[in-house]
Length: 132
Image (cartoon, rainbow, N blue to C red; front, side, top):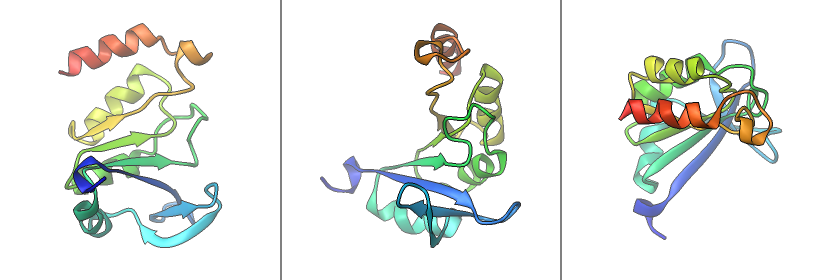
């Protein structure tokens, strides 16, 4: 496939409140020693074209985004990056844009009305159109 066609998915969580985010494996249960920070992102950037970063502690819970993780991604990622986890409203989408200075994209899943959530798919598409 080659790095220019590869999106690297990094699922992460904190070991302790306020601590760094670590990449996790095996259904998000096993911590690695790999932290999601500038050093790691720069090192992995040679092997892919983009990152997809899941904040697993808020994934699917519609409980809001991991603010500190979004800030790190916006500040440190040398490649395009998409954040996944916890987004539940247009305000959350605005927050990701603000915290990352517009450098991080965001996915929305179970919060969308087409999947049974309360966030309008049409309003989300309209929000995206205004960002361009």
